[in-house]
Amino acid sequence: MKAMRILIVEDEPGIVRFLERGLVAHGYQPLSADNGEDGARLAVDETVDLVLLDIMLPGLDGQEVLKRIRARRPELPVLMLTARDNLQNKVGALDAGADDYLTKPFAFEELLARIRALTRRTDQPRASLIEIADLHVDLLSRRVWRGEKQIELSSREFALLEYFMRHPGQALSRQQILSAIWDYAFDPGSNVVDVYVRYLRRKIDRPGESSLIETVRGVGYRFDPPQNA
Image (cartoon, rainbow, N blue to C red; front, side):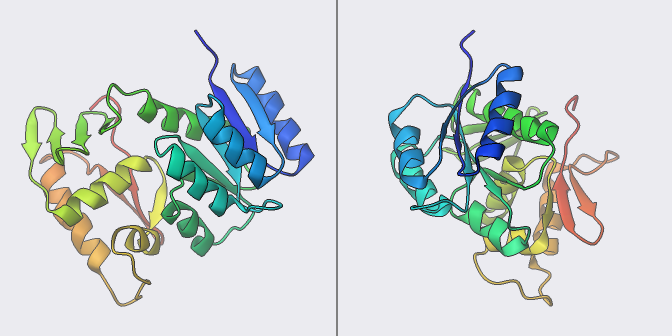
């Protein structure tokens, strides 16, 4: 089986060496660029399966690199690496088109879990289909099934479910969700996220079973369906 190629776009040599050693040890084939220009070029010209992209880079910054990647290879999974541990920058990375983000410093096992989650989605039979446990979302027809049952969702409910399914297992704040789905600044007095999560739960959850969308006290919500559902 061909090793998956992962492009590392990072200007700190120590971090690059750390990532390269770990990726090789787990069967991946890394290549690297230490600036945005080279990173963008390699991402679109080379056969790579995933990009680890730092936000702070010399020359082009990570968000500009991401724009170039999305213009040429919109399906390529991109995981942003950031030392900026604040919500605004994380939301900005996702809004710019990143599939996921990880804040430095991070445990390598967590990075591997994120890579596996992203590549599972790209390995699915059709890029238009997201499947987690027994929940299936077809992005082209905008249809949703739980097992054999088709579920009717409004456009906003569909967008919210898609967002949750693209970030399984992650604790997502209300501000993060609001910025991604409603595209305006968070109003602490607004309960629109809670209202739509409630709508969504009524439609995708089964009576007598735990909700697929877990409330994370003091943070927001986590989409974490059992894999044996």
